[in-house]
Length: 623
Image (tube, rainbow, N blue to C red; front, side):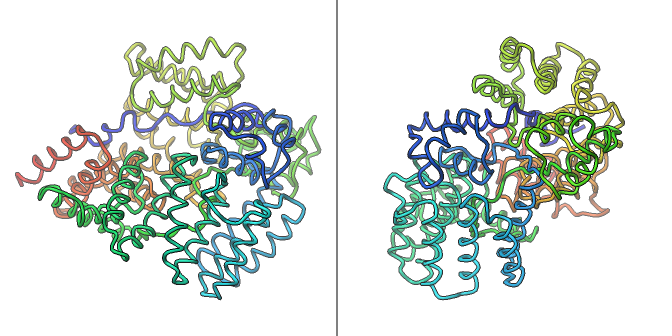
């Protein structure tokens, strides 16, 4: 069979996250390590949030705190909070669901729904951390801005929200402050309100200060998501005032950042600036122009807003799971009654109320229940084993190397990790054979049948040995998701493509049925869509492959992620070619192939670019 672009992406992203260790020690260690590496004192990090003593106890793993406060610590220290998955207990899940409803109401500018959600959120968080009050004030300010209420009132509300975590401090960004993403959202919104009020020079100063701040501390994953939105506003101001040199320099800088972080956000706008004002050769100018037109078509084709002002940069791109829903799904998969689950922990009525989200279990009971259904009991989980930062960093590097098909480099690190993890936990015992079998299989040191047996054993270490279809209602940990993905890949290599599809659909459905919107799971959802589409197409299910990759493309455009977008677009064109004179024309398929060429040129390697170019020459220029 002709090589598909799926082969351009290493192993196709089949390596995924693995469950972490103790929740408190994970988050506390990460906060402390990052804070110290960035030269931030405890006093600076916790200013306006809590006492230094409280932060010290969090860093030592002695105290828990609400997610909203933990996220603020992480973000101020310079860590993207979406590097962790989060298991919400029943008490906090009610707050998260209400925040999602608030966000949707404000996003859709539904004043009546927003008012109801605001009132409910205020009641739910009345006795909780003060940062909830900051969110309420901020959301109300955004809603008023969308409805063109008086600017003075909106500014007062933004200043009041800022005051909650920066008491007595004016909203200046360039005076050594460190910010959470909620605080950054407030500062961004304030600059936008100033711009809309007509004070362009003041807005320009605010936007420049925000960019300067993001250059110093912000996690690059967050920076690539937020930076282009501010740069877009600032570039337009430069152009309006005739500062074309500054506009060009900022556009070039943004293109570099977006390419490095594989992001699509505003890239067509910045490319158009370079096309108009940059020193390009005729061929370069022609390419940029065609790339811009292709990207514009793509957003229009999938009906996704291209240049969207993301007003709350703190509430997206995180992975949330509801503990009540998770406990119920896993209990039923394990064939366990509520009475059996409750035995030795609590009464069955409490289990029922926990699963329905009506009560929050005590911390000790929460951990015991989670462990009884095969999970760690962590509120936060890293995507890899972590009993120490050293272990986490080694495991992270193993994951990266395997995803880049560099198994020969990963294997020594896996062996090093095996030595470090004496008396490994069940979840570490799930991770180690899973990644080792992948590496050895990719290197040809063991056959695929042996890889398959090891991966099945790893998966069923925490799950009952059931058929794939029987697992469909389960809620999977990061570790189990990684095993499922690897097992799917192995099934495909063994020629069992239908079994592979069954496994991948189980994961896709888990994300689609999650209690929050898909934007919170975009990175993983797109990878699943791409892998399903790839397997379907390679096995003659061309139309089914196109439709599932459409889901992934639409999600990628909404989230601004490019990492596999170009490959999904190529896959669609390749599948369409097999349906010429039936469903699609060569003109339709060529449109997708050409856009994949533009994106591979911008984001891919020279090999990727050459592969697509050769494909166009071979398939289209001779027809």
